[in-house]
Every structure is written in C-alpha cells, then in structure tokens.
Length: 291
Image 1 (cartoon, rainbow, N blue to C red):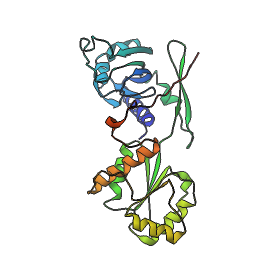
Image 2: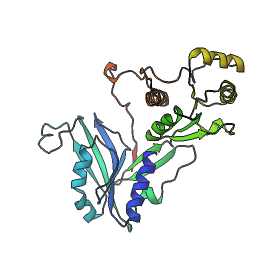
Image 3: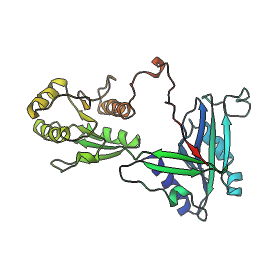
Image 4: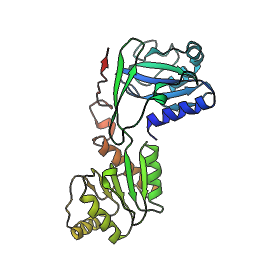
C-alpha cells in the first residue's frame, strides 16, 4: 500500500472508532535523516502507529507527547536536531545526524485531516499536493502514484514476488492464463509462466509496448531463444536473467533478488553496496515552499 493510502486508511480507522490522533509530516530536513520531506506517520491515542518518519525513536517520543497536541487541536511545527552535542541528554540518541522539521496535525471526527477529506489520486499521473503550514507558507509535493507490477505466472515462485512487491508499497496484478492486458497499465512486467509458448506470446505484446521494465525468469540462453522466436532483440528494459546477483536459491530469496532489482531500476540507482558509494544515501531533493 502506498504511504499516502496507508496514512489515509489509518486516519479514517481512528475517526470511525471515534478516536483521536495526529498526522506527522516531515516538512524539512537538513543533513543525514532517516526520511525526507513528505514522509508521514499517523499516531493514534490508542497507541497505534502507521508509517515511519524515523527508525522508531521519534515515533516513541512523539507518542509520549500526544496528549498536549490533542488537547490544543491546532497544527504546529516542531524541530528535532540530532546534530546537537546534547542529543543523548534530551533522551533520543538518534542514529542519524540531521535536523527534521515536523508538522503536527491533530485530528478527530470533528476535525478530520485534509488528506482524508481532499486527497485524491489522478489515475497514473502524479498529484501536486499542497500542505499549509502554520507560518503561512505551504509545502508543495509531487506525489507519484503507486507502481503497478504485472506478474505473469503462478505457483511457488510467483506468490513470494507478489507479497514482497506489495510490502514495498506497489500494486500487484497477478495475470491469469490467456487474460487480456494493456501494457500501458503497468510500470513493470515479470514473466514467469514456465511455459515457452506462453512466454513468447506475452513477450511479443510487451516488446510492442512502451513498458519500461520487462523481466523474464530463466537463463540467458532461454531468453535469447524466446527473443529470436519473436523477432526481438535485447534492450535496456529487458531483464533476463531476472534479479540481482544475491546468491538466491529459494523462492523467497529469488523474490528478494527480483524486487531489489525492480527498486534499483525504478529509482535509477546502481544497486551497489552503500559503503562503496562516496555520495549521500538519499539524493538531494528540494521541496518548494510558497507564501
């Protein structure tokens, strides 16, 4: 489930139960932080936490301060600064060394949050979402809809891929045999039917489409034979053998290798170990604010 959908669902569940909660939104970061601007979490007065803005330390501290915000029921921005020398002294000992500004938005059934009443997806197009801040400024986000993954195949190998892809926040469509499809509907297609003729039929349609990722399970030689049969050649979007080199053996390990490759392709990252990179973990992103 997309992080935005999860926040909306958690907020609605609290409201339907006539409980109160707060939506925490990261509105600015500086230095090394676990999440970037736009990350959200929902904390209910019943102790439930949905989403993540840190590795867990901030959520615990925020939960302890929940009562004061629910009593005021007014939005405010607070700052956590883990670059300070007294970081340990104020009780968190954060692993990151950065600054986060967090928007705190209390809500109940009489004061529903804006994301519940207003946010709507725009099909496959990104949504421009504006969050008003107490200062009078606004945080403007371009929120990309969930990735949509098509899996052609079934059985022991396909389901772990589907489960892991869903846990990454992507929408997964398990295609039935001979089911009609439009590749325009997908960000990626994984072909693992274990049937040569069926794979050839699917690949023919995928290669004729603009879909940016085509993954085929099996060895390179089988992939070459399939491509020769349909008159296609390897290009940058064709991934066969499928997945990263993780030494995977079991269906669950193979699923990890596949989903990890998908993530790296989607985000245009190298999939190299972070320790080998002499760059920040997160690419710099600017969140514009307007008066």
